Image (cartoon, rainbow, N blue to C red; front, side, top):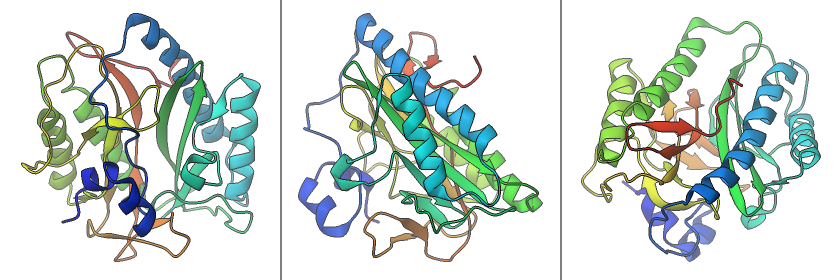
Length: 279
């Protein structure tokens, strides 16, 4: 298995095989101050606002480029910069991944959203030196029950993982909770891509993995850590491949994939979800 952490920590490897993102400047895990968390709340609120608006805005017949242009305009309207645009050459302000596309789908005017599609929209905002990062899965129009179930289980897995976060618990506590929800529903956890630390850089240590493993560092959580937790699950096999555009990742078996993500801060007794859309 090609562990995501290897991709995160090796810039040259990331460029050569098209797998992104990677952790910027290996500095270790940063504990954020109350001032920094306040700044992250602002960038994360922008992300939450934009995703909430996109959920209402998206309709069958739209292109993913239209969604990208909408997101970029709203992020800049609120005084921030899109975290993703230009990030190691990525051309969009959102990642728009449809159906069997797992992550990093490039917005395109020719990629038309249709009723029955499963659309993942991932975006970030950079404001006052700090990033927020979040992803939603949107079921477009009337979808098959199996499609809705995949999205629901991915969201349930995210919730289960978040419920395990508090100072003193570990990354394996998060991973085990996520994996149990996914496997018990007959789906698979994508292992090549994980969550991550987030803050002054879009991708920081640690790698927040979604499956039990002894091969990745099992960090004990501390108050003030800021994490992007993002289970990515597949309807069929966990295995993925990167297309020739060097960004778009798809399932090898052509089956569907779903992703949900929140940026959170670790507290002594739980978390605060900085990208919470319920406000």
